[in-house]
Image (tube, rainbow, N blue to C red; front, side, top):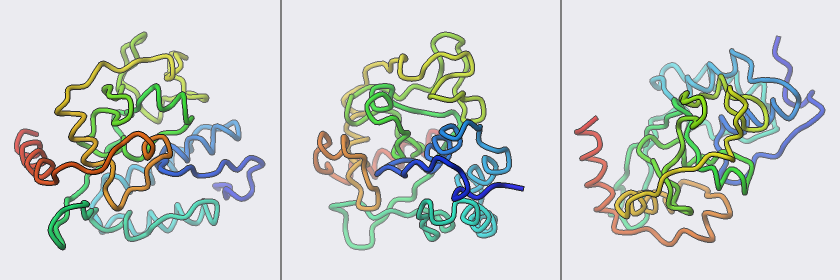
Length: 217
């Protein structure tokens, strides 16, 4: 039987702009545990399954987390359509989230010690603050990074710290794309993103990119 979050001795705060998977990882590792298999399956269901599979899963997860964190039911259960700043009224973009492989900016992770929700967006591949590619593979053991194999204190399964890794420089095109997404009205950005990321660029650029992205998947 799963122990409710409220019964654990350490209760980290959900940080502004933090991903749900990242928070659950931080919570369990702060208490000396890995993410239980059933909880990890619930998280993957919320990220990847169709709408009719998510209601019961959301309820089970919420029963465990309780009031420790606030989960927005509509966002996790319904298809994710996000209104973008500067677009015409009612114009939205459908968002796909991904956690396989795990993606992150080593510099942000070192500065904030949490995983940003922005890095979960399927077509986000660079950090809008440090202009580098998100890391998806350990440079030492060459394994792709996954939540289920991640050790405590943000370490790869080979014990290499994620904060010691580095991402390659991104192109201007990739940076522009991510900076189009970052100021979206729905997303609550981490403080370091808010201070360094400017306002949204032409939303038509984003729409054009997404059409190209989906056509070439």
